[in-house]
Image 1 (cartoon, rainbow, N blue to C red):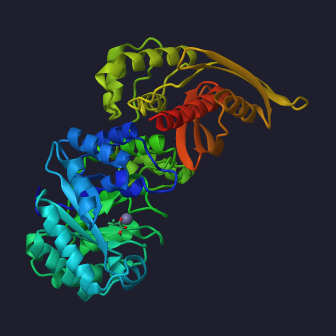
Image 2 (cartoon, helix red, strand yellow):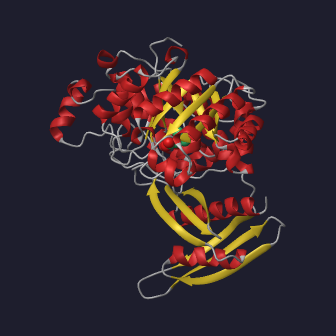
Image 3 (cartoon, rainbow, N blue to C red):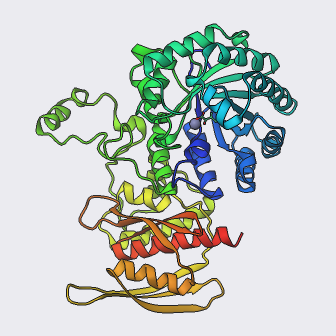
Amino acid sequence: MSENNVIIFDTTLRDGEQAPGCSMNVQEKIEVARALERLRVDVMEAGFPASSPGDLESVRTIAGIVKDSSVAGLSRALEKDIDAAREALSSAAAPPRIHLFLATSPIHLEYKLKMTPEAMLERAVSAVRYAKKFCSDIEFSAEDASRSNLDFVATVFSAVIAAGATTINFPDTTGYAMPDEFARMVKYVREHTNGIENARFSVHAHNDLGLGVANSLAAIGAGTDQVECTINGIGERAGNASLEEIVMALNVRQDHWRRRTSIDTTHIYPVSRLVCAVTGVKVQPNKAIVGENAFAHEAGIHQHGVLVNRATYEIMTPESVGITKSEMVLGKHSGKHAFVDRLTQLGLAVDENAMDSIFAQFKLLADTKKTVSDRDIEALVIGTSRAIPETWKLERWVTNAGSSVSATSAIRLEGSDGGMRETVHFGNGCIDAAFSAINDIIGKDVTMEMFELGSISGDSDAQGEAMVKIAYNGKHWNGRGISTNIVESAIKAYVAAINAMEADVNK
Ligand code: KIV
Ligand code: ZN
């Protein structure tokens, strides 16, 4: 990597996953990790191994698979956490990183850690020394650095570098900093950190005031070597700095920044869609780079300009971020070759073993729809590596609704024991009736937290896409369903969420 490159440290699977409603199961995390590797992130933080046995296992699995990015595991500055991170990264396919953190701000020291600055410094140094015995690549984060005494942060950074830290990270944990101020802080701390020439300087910005990306870019201007960010900007509270926005700002404004990244930008859109699908959290239509409207030109005067010369209103092409429009229409006569070609064009990877089944589903779909759009194909493929066992399979459904009758739904599910269970339920609409019938069959009072219905493409025979988030015993699961019938897409989404729950409960 050239010295001039900005290192992209992706934390979608750790800080991103901490966002409300963004939790992913291990299969989903593996799918996202593979997509991040194709995107060519330098480092991906795969989780916080000491936080739960499940997190340890997913970091271990991802570290064993990913070869082209370094996999990092987060750890508090505690030996037991470092042991968990070490175990999770012990058979990593690429040189791994242990990411240690301990707060430096007065408020965190006094109220959270109940520690003096001197004790904090000592703990930070001994944690780095301990971790260094097992891993050569150590990152140290001064949590809440932007609300800390900068001389103290520089003292801590100097000491942890001397103890073996190879990256020091300056987080704006609460999203409090202003861009010009953040740049000044980065510059000051860099200048006052001894041994900085032997380490990389990183920043980690949150988005509480909507400034995560602006602060990251300001820090890049002040000489930061690494930025920490997430796909779609998901993360704690208002989220983290968005990877796609930072990367495209550097890319589009090369003339301004003169810094590059290793990111293959043509994978941005597919990864963004994948993260939406596995978390069930969509991006807003006007979201920069990956929103539905990011490249839409509604006003006549704009449309005219773009038709004459796209550069009149477009500062980057949709293709440069992986949004492709294809000339060839796929339908029921299309063969496997054309289908596989389109998958490649769309930057979608399909497991060899799953290809035949996905192609068969494509053929079924092509029988019910005149043309199969890129969004339909995306919807078929995304999430297919989630091998969630089907505790319940939708066998058949019937609904009855109208303005003068109470809505009813009859649902028949097949259990994993092969037994059929069927019931009918009234409801406040046929979807509510269907969900209540499913709850009756499975014998659990599951509550629905979120339900969204959309269409995959805008055409008149578009498929319905439903996203459901359910809660049971204080835990949450997502499900997604697609069908040419919107009621069926909702029922499928609910059954998928129930299966994710059963897989977790039966583990
Ligand atoms: O926001 C934060 O400070 C963090 C650290 C663990 C880097 O996420
Ligand atoms: Zn964070």
